[in-house]
Amino acid sequence: MAKIIDGKKISQQMKDELKEKAERLKEKGKTGALAVIQVGQDPASSVYVRNKKNACAYIGIESLAYELPEETTEEELLKLIDELNGKEQVKGILVQLPLPKHICEDKVIRAISPKKDVDGFHPQSVGAMTIGEPGFLPCTPAGIIQLLKRSDVEIGGKHCVIIGRSNIVGKPMAILMLRENATVTVTHSKTKNLKEICRQADILIVAMGKPQFIGAEYVKEGAVVIDVGIHRDENNKLCGDVKFAEAEPLASAITPVPGGVGPMTIAMLMNNCVQSIEEE
Ligand code: NAD
Image (cartoon, rainbow, N blue to C red; front, side, top):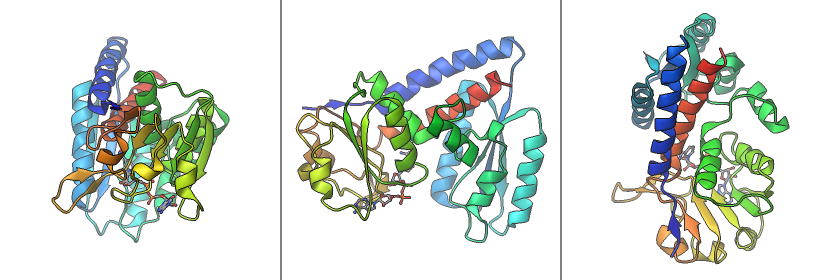
C-alpha cells in the first residue's frame, strides 16, 4: 500500500505560511498585485484564472484581472504587458496559456519583465534556474519538489525518470531534480524502451499528457510515482497519465489526480508572488 501524497493538504500548509508572510510584509509596508491576463474564453483557462484569483484573495494579495476578447491583437497584448511592467504596484504578471493562434506565445513570454515573471517562463528565469542563480522557478516542477520534500521523500542520489520534455514541466523538472542531486533520465515521445527505463526509476515523474497511459509494467516496486497529467475521462471525471489502481499497489508513495500536483502549482505561484513583493 502506497502512501498517498496529499497535494491538497500540503498546498494548504504552504498557502497558510504564505498568508502569514504576506501579512508580515504588509506590516513593513510591502504590498503588491498580481496581474492575470486571459485572452479569449477557453473554459479550462477560465477555471485556472478563477483559482489563481481566489488564491490571491486567500493569501491577501491584490489581483488585477484583464479579461481580453479572443480577437485581441498581439500588439495590443504586448502594449498591456509593457504598461504593467512599468506599474510599480504590479509585482507579478501572468498570461494564461494557451493563447489564441494569432498571438506568438514566445514573444509574449519574453515581453514580461523577468522581475515580474512569476510563472518562471522567461528565458532569463530559465537560464538563472539552470545555473542555480536566484530567480522565479516554474510553478509545476517547483511544486513537485515541495511535494517530495514535505512528504519526506529523499531525492539525493535517487534515480529520477521523467516522462515528457516540455518547457513548462519536463525540462525544468529535470533541472530542479538535478539541483536536488538526483540522477536524472529524461524520456520523451522518441524514447526507445520506455518501460524498461521507467522500471529503473526510484522516482517516476509522468508529464506526458496521455490519459491513464502508465500502468503497472512501468513501475518498479517501491518507486515514488508523481502524476502531472490532468484529463477528463469518458465519465467526465478527472484522471491523470497514470493508471492509479495499477501503480498504487507497487509504489511506496504516489500522487492522486485530482489532489496531487495540481494544487501545488497554484501554491507555488503564490510563493513566487510573495517572493516578488519581498524583493521589491
Ligand atoms: P506537452 O504535451 O507539452 O508535453 C508532453 C511530453 O510528453 C512531450 O515532451 C512528449 O515528448 C512526451 N510524450 C508524449 N507521448 C509520449 C510517449 N508515448 N512516450 C514518452 N513520452 C511521450 O504537455 P505538458 O504541458 O508538459 O503537460 C503534460 C501533462 O501535464 C498534461 O496532461 C497537462 O495537462 C498536465 N499539466 C498539469 C499541470 C498541473 O498543474 N497539474 C501543469 C502543467 C501541465
